Length: 234
Image 1 (cartoon, one colour):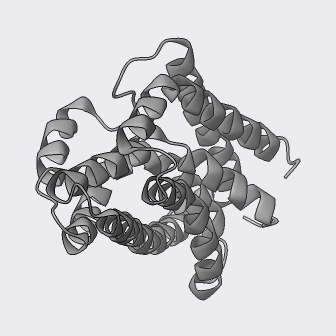
Image 2 (cartoon, one colour):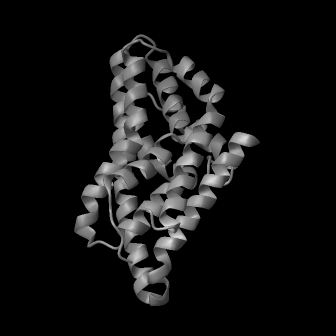
């Protein structure tokens, strides 16, 4: 599978992942928990938000390396798949984009491959409610990434499949770049709340009010990338 890697292609996939509302929702819950225990300590909010973001960044980098190795192993074991892998990834992007657009047109919480499943949410909320410190936010971030995977894995899977054509060491800069974009909304939200520009509740309310539009943006990006990949435009 010989493909041209471009910053634009990887950035677009990361952007589709970054606007996923479930990652934003989890961060909001972490910050609410911190403020509950430290209502007047904005420094704790900053530290906790950055600690949670750092945990997500590190774990997703590890997950990316694992997924790439799985792709490499699969394509070497089933060699007939390798020439068609790029086209298959394009189709996955189109399907995933269509699922996001469906959530825009007819929203229901816990959408397949687009949001955290409803059955997982009570356990995640209970876990996050115990966070009282930045250190706790980091360790919760490490654990919670497993619950975020069902709703954020799609674009990352496509990216990892594309990167699997490279030697493993050459994939690392691309994964670092992808994940900077992925966690950027978390950093921005943390800084906005720390600076007093907005409150956690306002951010949470904005997310709920605009959740269908976040799905629409992600869907259009993924479908556009998938179509472009399928027809060899990128």
